[in-house]
Image 1 (cartoon, rainbow, N blue to C red):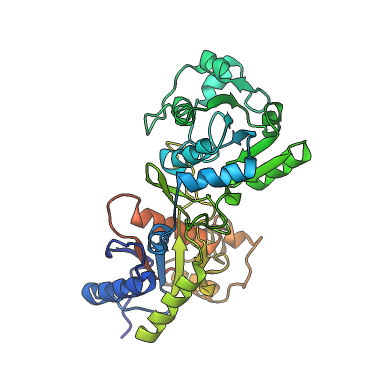
Image 2 (image 1 turned 90 degrees about the vertical axis):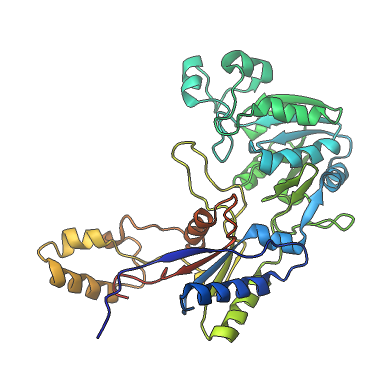
Length: 398
């Protein structure tokens, strides 16, 4: 007798020991999954997914860097130049400690902030205020004095921080001059200096191209800083300082490196112990957007720096309500269920452009699963850096 299945996708946050440098993250992950499976009574199945937050992978690697080594890399690249530090995000966790390192290695900084918000939606000022003052953020370049004259002193709605004042104080703490301007045009900084550190994340390649095409003499992005170890420091040859988080006041945790061998090892160990082909990924920010605060949760350079091959690609799904309202609008009950099930079982391998797929999500699987994992694990004290997902690849017929 077949038992009706009434539960689809299930995501579980798994608790594990606090990870420290030198720990075997693959072994700990596998042990945590098997222990949870035994105690909670769920079997490991083919096409289950294990997602591990990037933070614990980087901690196990000991991938850290001090502001001193950041300063050394900045000094090596810019020498005595005035540095245009442009488009940083407004974040104590993500950028403030990096700014300390930059300031420690510089002689003078011109800090150019985008407005009304940074790249990920942290606002310096509301759009409505720009309208009231007749300011066009796409054409108008503002000095700090002019910005204050227009908008006064605004604090971030969540952190209570005046980031203009905060970032300026960080730079001046190192005894150097900090001039602040506001513009969304990379070329604006070239009126002040030809040596630029572009600190944006997802738009960095465009920023670099524009600067190089308009007379900049030195242009680096955050992924150019700490691409190699300095005096034994952590590094990331692909992402540099992108994806870094504050560890202490003078230390940052870098985005993990060499993650592909980690996910492959976890998959192989689980295969050996359970006989099942489980997919594995490392995830960072979930890339969702908060509708109230307007913040896009993607300060990391990518959602997933490494994943096994079964997580490559995008979903190929049909919209059930479209089928019910259109293709099979004359059916109800078991007849409707049977018709929908047959349609799903015989759907095309590629539904791009088909009406039946409208409203489904054309995102990469790793971005979708990363959102689910990030929301499940949270960023606080849940203590569940491993997320175990079952039934994600199932559909209405399975």
